[in-house]
Image (tube, rainbow, N blue to C red):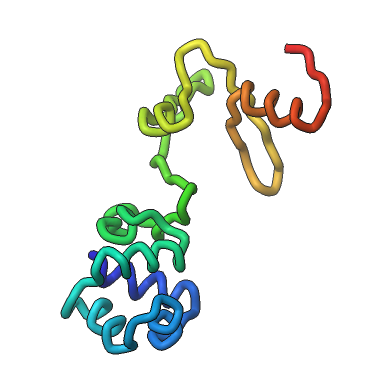
Amino acid sequence: MISTNLKRLRKNNQYTQEDVAEKINVSRQSVAKWENGESTPDIDSCIKLTKLYKVKLDDLVNYSEEESGIAIPPKGKHFFGAVVVGERGQIVIPKEARELFNIKAGDKLLILGDEEKGIAIVHQRDLLNFVGDLGIAIKE
């Protein structure tokens, strides 16, 4: 898995093997062996690779584009899967997303829309904190 991920990330970032080798201070042959599955990078090289490609270490090592159907997400970006819209427009936010963003029963979420970019869901507290940081007062 890591060999496939390394090759895809390098190509997606339009780097040559020489570019990657230079950026993380290893030989081009090491990069080639990692991508061919002949060897695996040590932990220090893996950490440098996650910084270079801006991905999580777990995704670099374990992510499977074949299983998920999408490329490795950048660090801090998540794909939680698809949800089904019920008859009355209700959706269930996946557990992993609720835990990551500390969403609890009874919380207020804001639904924002852009006709070109789509729909976004933002926790009300986060928007209020953001607006408050701008010095704008909003009544709840």
